[in-house]
Amino acid sequence: MSQTLDRPAPTTDPAATRIDAWLADFERALVTRDVDRAASMFATTSFWRDLVSFTWNITTVEGRAGVADLLRATVEHTDPHGFRTTEAPSEADGVTSAWIEFETAVGRGRGHLRLMGEQGAWTLLTSLYELTGHEEPLSERRPMGAEHGANPDRVTWLEAREAEAAELGRTRQPYVVVVGGGQGGIALGARLRQLGVPHVIIERNARAGDSWRKRYKSLCLHDPVWYDHLPYLDFPKNWPVFSPKDKIGDWLEMYTKVMEINYWDSTTCTSATYDEAAGEWEVVVERAGEQLVLRPKQLVLATGMSGKPHVPVIPGQDVFAGEQHHSAQHPGPDAYRGKQAVVIGSNNSAHDICAALWEGGADVTMVQRSSTHIVKSDSLMEIGLKDLYSEQAVAAGMTTHKADMTFASLPYRIMHTFQIPVYDAIRERDADFYARLEQAGFLLDYGDDDSGLFMKYLRRGSGYYIDVGAAELVADGKVKLVHGAVRELTEHGAVLADGTELAADLVVYATGYGSMNGWAADLISQEVADKVGKVWGLGSDTTKDPGPWEGEQRNMWKPTQQEALWFHGGNLHQSRHYSLYLALQLKARMEAIPTPVYALAEVHHLA
Ligand SMILES: Cc1cc2nc3c(=O)[nH]c(=O)nc-3n(C[C@H](O)[C@H](O)[C@H](O)COP(=O)(O)OP(=O)(O)OC[C@H]3O[C@@H](n4cnc5c(N)ncnc54)[C@H](O)[C@@H]3O)c2cc1C
Ligand SMILES: NC(=O)c1ccc[n+]([C@@H]2O[C@H](COP(=O)([O-])OP(=O)(O)OC[C@H]3O[C@@H](n4cnc5c(N)ncnc54)[C@H](OP(=O)(O)O)[C@@H]3O)[C@@H](O)[C@H]2O)c1
Image (cartoon, rainbow, N blue to C red; front, top):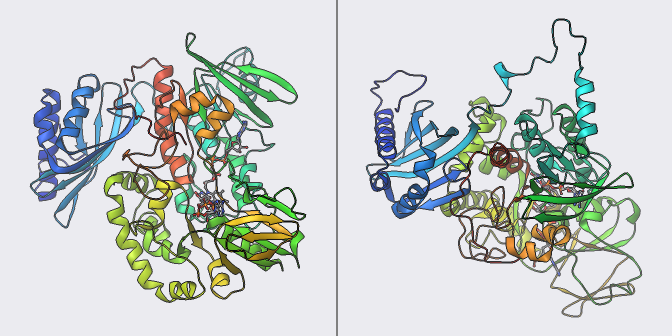
């Protein structure tokens, strides 16, 4: 029953007493299958977010009715028990918070609980972290590596790796094929290796890390190192705060090797078809001029949410005499010194590219169609990320795991209420900066409800620039700014909707990316893409994230309407954290552990 692991009960700490009593009552209600009693222990306004432990889904339920519904569907087979705290609870502003652990019929879970005064649970996070009997070979369970003694049939580590590489996909089928070997596919590959799931990661590039290397040459990550660690292996302490793109490429390549990921580079997936009867995919790949058919039970598309360039169709693209390319193909400024460049778009890619072109001696014009959220990198680090992902956080004992779980413990429905004050503070701190940008004619926003960058990212994956210097160039007029849509291209330039003509030798479409289910359409079929629907977004009914409310990111890391098809990706933080839940779902299926899915999301939008 409930107890504090590192401090023997009984306790005199009122916060611990309150949490322990709640956990004991909750457990009693669950063990006796008294769903109504368990639901009544939640506040009227409350949220229970489950990552795979009860629901075999990533889902959030709201209020007592939501809790009761979830439990009615799951409590019998989940058989949850052993709820306990893992460290002393804390108390602030009438909310008592605790880190918890528990067990289920098939695994072990971790979570977080917030009690709101006497009203009961306000937020509960439950998550599965390991399957009983399938624990990862870590720490005291790590492999021996060497085989001591004498063995005439000795197989070395290298021989075993080579044999696996020779067999997989030829004489032995992988259980999982992951299409896409960027950071997403790589992180998932590491988890699958740890869990003993036969897998192959298919990557069309020649080397792991190339998806970063091939981006424009000035690119550095905008997220700091503490946010970016990969599973199992943190960046070393000398790693720069903001990784240059080629350096992160090298890290991913090294990681792929040392984590023993079955990584097929220079291999392109050309099609995939699900055979319902056989319960397996037929995945066609081209590898070194050879066509191979893989037959995995599960298929993961980790092809990148910023991987499908969106290039608008503009009249005159065929007559334009200069160069034109999407930001994903933009090489950098070297060939454009003294040239006139028009960059369409006003978000992250547009700013990065404009700044580099300006530094490289080009005459640069940015075309802004609608408003953009800009936040200075320093301010974001200082006010937005410091408590969870910073050197100060590390010094205060914050671990990456705890930071990830803290972030995960805030239900998406109310996350914006925590974010709005952050961006209010940033607006105040950087008021002069924003005023100068507005004076220069730049159209600013802070999100539809002023909740800033993270919410924009979660809702639409676009619409902002983390300022590392380019905004000053716009404010100073060094990068010229014009407004509106581009009506047409002529032989020597671009014409805006209001008739303004811009001479150009180069047009860059920094116009963003398409929904990830476009990959399903390309590789599988339009029918399956439509069946699965839009990928990403919360259904917040804000710009580019149409309702209805979903509660979680659409289709990410969880079962989709297409059996055995999964989507994985996102930023480094998401790839790290959510790859665990995806890997556990795949492992459970491989081991034939029952995985009844609660509340499979309906499809409301096609793309
Ligand atoms: C310019 C830019 C900067 C970014 N900066 C940051 C940042 O600072 N911090 C952050 O956390 N995130 C950042 N992101 C967002 C995100 O982290 C990156 O897009 C990241 O690369 C996503 O990783 P991924 O593995 O999901 O997708 P990708 O890195 O896009 O990898 C997908 C892979 O799939 C492969 N592929 C696609 N189709 C096939 C096929 N048919 N067969 C075989 N292989 C295929 C591609 O070659 C590619 O390597 C940035 C994105 C962009 C565009
Ligand atoms: N260093 C970094 O960390 C970094 C750098 C670059 C990108 N990224 C990431 O990559 C992702 C994508 O960013 P992004 O900047 O490439 O794309 P984005 O945020 O989707 O921005 C696209 C821009 O193009 C404009 N646009 C689209 N179609 C247009 C059209 N037909 N005519 C005129 N303008 C048009 C959009 O305007 P509307 O708003 O009017 O549609 C918007 O300004 C984000 O997740 C971002 O964080 C990160």
